[in-house]
Amino acid sequence: MANQMADFFRAYPADEARAGIADHIQSFWTRGMRAELQALVRAGGQGLDPLVREAFGGAALGESPILRETGGPEEVGPMGSDAG
Image 1: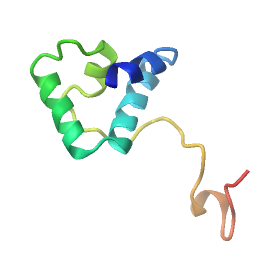
Image 2 (image 1 turned 90 degrees about the vertical axis):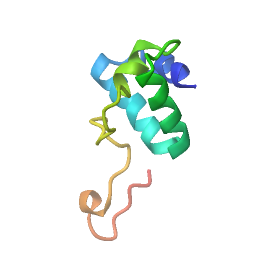
Image 3 (image 1 turned 45 degrees about the vertical axis):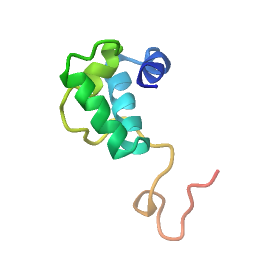
Image 4 (image 1 turned 60 degrees about the horizontal axis):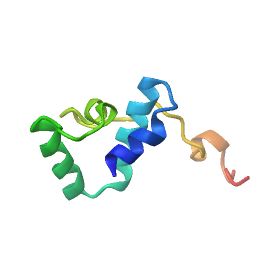
């Protein structure tokens, strides 16, 4: 599954691709899935796409630099909506 994400994000600049992979893993993978991937990376990452290894190379996953499509109330104002 992680390698499929790398295939998807390969069209992005490298920094955005790594951030997109890390963001997706942090947002949608269970703690167990992330732990399993981290163990695989620490064991050498054999079979993992280099983008995945770089995105999750043992470092803590932090805030993604990729901009979100929607904004919170602080961005759209009181009673505002980000609905299109």
